[in-house]
Amino acid sequence: MDFDVKEISTLIKTRLEGYEFEAQGDEVGLVLESADGIARIGGLPNAMIGEMIEFESKIFGIVFNLETDEVVVIILGKKTDVRAGSWAKCTARIMQVPVGNALLGRIVNAIGDPIDGKGPVNTEKFRAVECKVPGVIDRLPVSVPLQTGYKVVDGLIPIGRGQRELIIGDRQTGKTTLALDAIINQKDTGVLCIYVAIGKKSASIVEVAEILRVNGAMDYTIIVDASADDPASMQYLAPYSGTAMAEEFMHTYQKDVLVIYDDLTKHANAYRMISLLLKRPPGREAFPGDIFYLHARLLERSARLSKELGGGSITSFPIIETQKGDISTYVPTNVISITDGQIFLQSDLFYSGFRPAINAGISVSRVGGMAQIEAIRKLSGKLRLELARYKEKESFTAFASELDEETQKQLKRGKILVEILKQDKHKPIPVEEQVVNIYLATSGILEDLEIHDIKAAETFIMTSVRTKHADIFDTIRSTHKLTKETEEQMVKVIKEAISAFQIKKA
Ligand code: ATP
Ligand code: MG
Image (cartoon, rainbow, N blue to C red; front, side, top):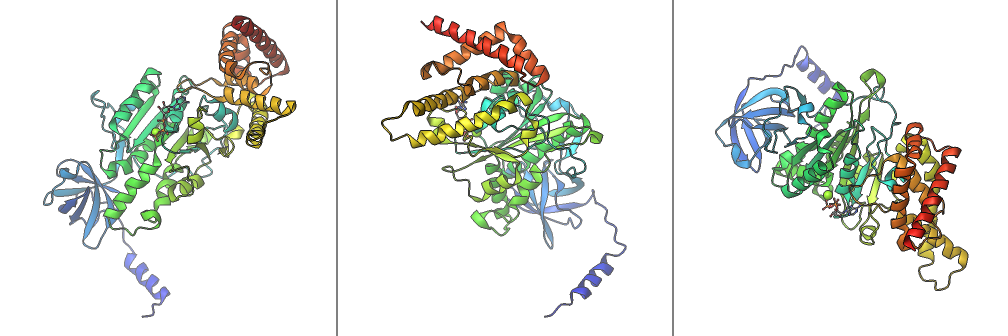
């Protein structure tokens, strides 16, 4: 049958004329079926997509599908909480979560209920889990650094406030540790943090909370946990809830916020499960067609607001787990294209003892360079070059038995560089100390030391500068610059410390 497009659109227009939509908060329907965390409800003709539905058992659900005679709702609770035959009510609201300062230091679930056994969260304020994002005019470019405390990251892959930086790598390569250390490093900076855990074991959340607490980071952090035992609906919702909490700090309190999504691979899997249960057509790798939109609409909420809007920001670190380092599968490629850069963590580097196991050669930060402080920027070009040169020489000379003196010297310099870049977990280094540290790595000043002494020498030198010449750090911290004078003073102090180290060793 041939349709006349014009005719159809005229028909629709006349039908809609004078129609005024009003959300019906009082409509009550009947649960027809409830299985696998999904309820089919009849008698809610005015329900909207994304609307919050209240069930008789006082738990909530979100409308996912509108069908001819029924609406399909994902249940935010245990499967057994909703029975067929019970009633369900429209609320005329988008799903909301509690927000505000009272949540800091707390562990909550995806709907914002506390799960840390420390009593109720005292807040009156709620915010919708999905919302309109700031437009281009409302945003400022990234120009203020967000330091992670890792030399490799802040030196080579600098991140700025408002940026979205993907952390990607195989299992057990230090992804979570990198994110947690970035949180720990925000102490005394005024940046608030939200750690969203998706599909993890409950025990590992206890561990995360303990690491943050021991390092004094829990006071300015909220943990949103949708664990592996929670239904897929909660795992799906958690990152949006966490972001709503961050938005409250950004919009209302003009704060800078760091949000970690650990991890979006599990988030995508939860959404795939829901979609398959809803019989939405599966596409590539059985994911539904809107899987890109799932993450795009989440990550576009990271922003740095204009001065008129208060200048707050949300920086986000989504985490993606890969299999055997393969980044060309569906979800990783999506998230790579949404974010402003990515940090690649590699198993072979991790097991060879290079930790954090970041492959600096293929990791990038597309916008953070503008945010790097001048003193580091000055050194980072050399750092990148030396590291690349070493990697090239290393593979080149792997099979050569006889190396000329010059090559040997260059290899040794590279090895020193690698030694210095290694950094233990939960020991973030302030940026002013990183400047001195990166100088040690790139200047060749440690050339006469043995490789196995480098780490000890580094600690010795840094302690010596910190205790005896803290003014060097103070100058760099306050001016963000490494002037000629400071550099000369720094070199003198370092040389003295090296001599002292050698005497001590002998
Ligand atoms: P998963 O895939 O299981 O989530 P992951 O990639 O998040 O793992 P982590 O849990 O962060 O990895 O780290 C794996 C192990 O390596 C942990 O025991 C952690 O303590 C250790 N580790 C990570 N980074 C470092 C580091 N820089 N120095 C020393 N140990 C580290
Ligand atoms: Mg992890």
